[in-house]
Image (cartoon, rainbow, N blue to C red; front, top):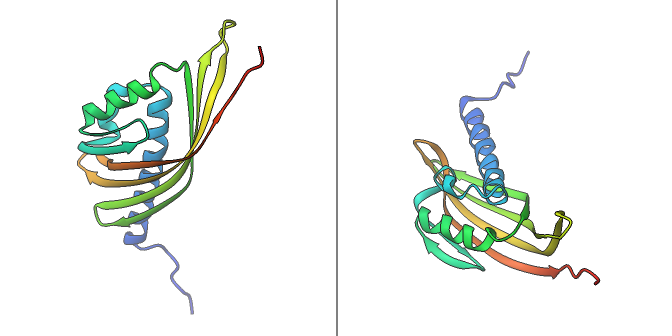
Length: 152
C-alpha cells in the first residue's frame, strides 16, 4: 500500500505566499538601503501606515518622504531582517521580524564609516493586491542603539 505524500494545491499556494511575503521583507530592507524611495508602491499599499522612531505617517507618498528624511543623508545603510514569522489568513498576513540596521557616513578617504547601529522589532500587516503582496501597516520598536565612536 502506498501513501500519497504529494502536496495539495492549498499547501503549494501557502508556500508560494510565504515565499512572496519573505521576499517582501527582503525588498523592504533593500528599498531602504538602495534609497529607491520612488519605488514605494512596490512595497506598500496606497493607504499604508508606518509607525517608527522617526515618525508616524499614512499614505505611500508620506512613507517615501519619511524614509528619505531618515535615511537619505547617510552614505550607506545596511538593513538585516531575520527571524521572520508569517501568519497568513486568506488575502491578509501578519508578519513579525527582527532587524539590525547600520547607518554609515563617508570618511574623508571615501570609505563608509558606521555611525550607529540599531536593533528593532517589527510587526507588519500585508494584503494581497492585484500587483502581489504589499505592506499595509508597519510598526517598529527600537530595542537598542549603539553609537560607533571612532578615535581621533
